[in-house]
Amino acid sequence: MEGPGDRAFRLLNEYSSGFMVSQVLFAACELGVFDLLAQAPEPLDTAELATRLGTSLHGTELLLDVCASLELLTVETKRNRAVYQNTDLSTTFLVRTSPTCQLHMLLYLSRTTYLCWGHLAAAVREGKNQYKRAFGVPSEQLFTAIYRSEAERLLFMRGLAEIWSVHGVGVMTAFDLSAFSVICDLGGASGALARVCASLYPDSSVLVLEVPEVVRAARSLFLSTVEAPVSFREGDFFKDPLPEADLYILARVLHDWTDEKCSELLAKIHHTCKPGGGILVVESVLEEDRRGPLTTQLYSLNMLVQTEGRERTPAEYRSLICSAGFQDFQLKKTGKIYDVILARK
Image: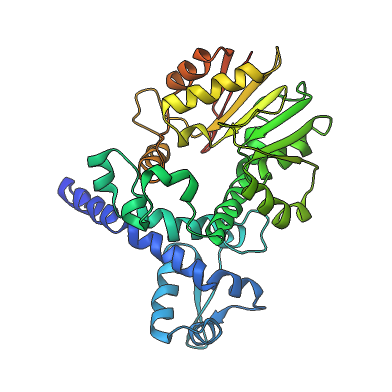
């Protein structure tokens, strides 16, 4: 029977080894374990997997067995050898050909976010992001040099698109948006969420405002797979005029910025927004006492180490949005990672 001390030490071990679990997932994704098993007509043993992956036999065996313990793979013994195949979790979220694959975001977390988190203590001491320590990028250049390469930018854009393949319909149907004729997704990256919006509200015109380099990447990489039509306009939502629209979407945008920057942007949107129009904010929202959900608390720490922003409570969002002039503030809890706020001019 487990006593209080046993449970406490077990939890301590789980927490202290959490980074190891993340690295197992990241390594298996980077090596292509799940894609290889998805392509195989039958379960594969360690030797076959190591040969096809170009990895060591010993290391592959260790990695596969941990993946099986984490329910990323199944393992069974056939003719005195262990053979592995994907679980439903891996097939749904970790195989490249799956429509809900999350591989690119996981690779971004592994190659960028994880390295920033290695300086969390410094971030807490200083109250600012850790790009300079992690990558040699000064904080004042954060949003001009945040991507160390074009490949990293594309990886993050693909990752965002993957997130909306899972959560897009839920956030776009939290409220009925059919009354809005022109919808503008500010900072909408590849246009993935805008395409979800356009597919759900085909009578509405949907456009994305993004900086030129993101628009170029979106047009070259993503528009060949468009399921619903969206248009793009080049511009910086802080510096350039905003397109006229009935509804402005800010999805995973406000959490990047300080309250002052958020207020500046919201006031600009309110000034441009048509009377009767509105704003739709999609974010992971903290409880009012800031003591949960755990995922959102962790996201807020991530904003500390990677940006200048944070996650916020409903009252904090209400204050920011209503102070900018918007009214009829409504928050819909989706029961998932992202909640949705609608307010009108």
